[in-house]
Image (cartoon, rainbow, N blue to C red; front, side, top):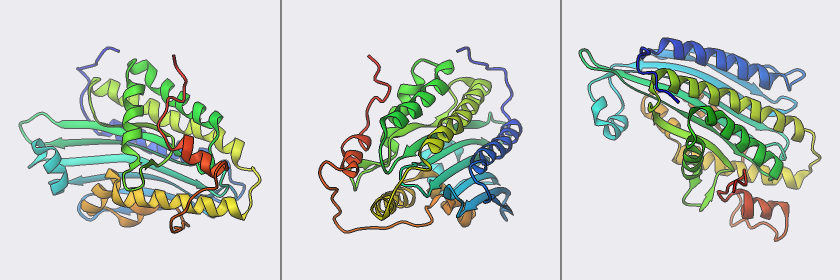
Length: 310
């Protein structure tokens, strides 16, 4: 794809798109609910910027769903960011994005997460430093091949117009990123993950992020529709809560967005919105051999080519 090197680098258009994406995803998730609606919590950040946190709780389909928009500014970056990118030292910054998490009640309906973000750091007399990041991933508690294939097909199709290698690169990065070393397992079946992305130029990189944002909800909504009414009992609910514990462990120990938000003195309630409302831990749990729970560990928590390409 041709790189548009003439497009001006500005946060304004990105911020407008992210606000619209938040509206769109929230409406798609809310459409599953006969009564529950998103609580809207608009907030200001004392040191610059603010955001719009939307949380749906105790619905018929979603135990909790959140769709956050944030737009924060600052005169300097947290030490962790400057250490990773020394060229950012002494620059003011704008960081904006949309983050989504959905935790359905039904153990057969997977948890889903998505994030798209934009960062720009500026200094008088110098060119801006900017990049996009984001992606989406799926965390099933009970695995279905059809869901995994559809999810990765959506990820592939979102990437395809922008380069033949993007899906393979960002799928592998997702598998690597959403991995819990202390458990020796992935968090789920992956999807896409990318960061520091500017290689297509501003206009085309922005178009790629828009493709990813739309693909997330277009891929997730049909899976929810298929699984939301699946029969389940207390044993499946207990396993769901146990697996949600892995979600908590990853977010608090490894997730870059969570760590950046807390280190930059972001809004704690919004940062931790991604946590499941209920989770559980069991000591030395082992699934019964041959069970659906064992199948999750054996096949769905191991990176693989779900598209079965030759």
